[in-house]
Length: 393
Ligand SMILES: *Cc1c(COP(=O)(O)O)cnc(C)c1O
Image (cartoon, rainbow, N blue to C red; front, top):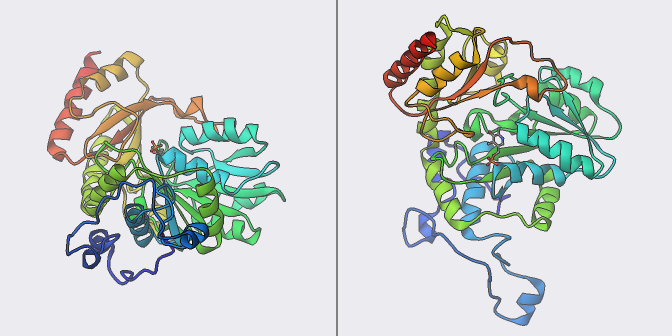
């Protein structure tokens, strides 16, 4: 349950992912923690029942299995404590709802994950919370947008389609001066490559569905807060009935053990392929923060310790049939709305259809790639073949 003391703080992340959230000494020497399937938890007598005076009170509120993943995420990403949710979107909605009330104003980056925007524009709006979208590149200028009723600034860096790197330290500094909280959707970097709390963030969210689970087979979310925000998050998360299932947690813990090695391969494969794509005549622009050509490259180098496997590109203007011929010709890139698993993916997208605070001026079609763990040579051959099919279309 979090708020635990961090005895493994002295180790590097690659060691931490192997140690976090397990304790064989308390488990008959068995390496992995047991998977507790629990709803009812019994109390020994009336006094204990009436005071709920024991470590675990009810399956929804916590079990050793839930503790294991929550503790591991806190140990890896920093912060004071973590609570789980059944999806990344549930983590986002629970985190925001835990801190806002009617009449509040919140600032959300214009590069935010589209379902987060839908949540703000529907549920929050109905509850009387006003969402204002801001330029992801605002940095310290976010101060000009703060009002007396501003409760929080929601960041996502980089944006998971358009890849703007936000100056989160600058945003956090201004926000803190005004008593405004900073949230971040840290799914792209994972708890390993961006240490949100060291950069002034108050609440950090993971769609664990992506890299923590890593195998495209489980939905899971997590919310980690600093100490000041912990009680409010903890109580509201409980009041809203959020939890996650034991078998899904087991799979997330299994995924977590290889997070470091998987991410390194995703990063290296993706950088190699992004460089290859950048040199292609069909490509107008790469949107990958680890490439020196990216406008956010210096901020990325300053604040992040790595890049994951997700990036986008803008094609030189071409017909939709040509774009579609390219997509349909790909054999190793599946088409689907997710990422973070072991396999490569691609989707077309159009930011002009959802942006409201900033204009999208690119003329060519936009494609987002997730680079999996396959051999780079095979992926490059696949892409080259698809470009050939595009030329024929
Ligand atoms: C996928 C995703 C989410 C939502 O996670 P789900 O588990 O699919 O609900 C949130 N933020 C980002 C950046 C994502 O890519």
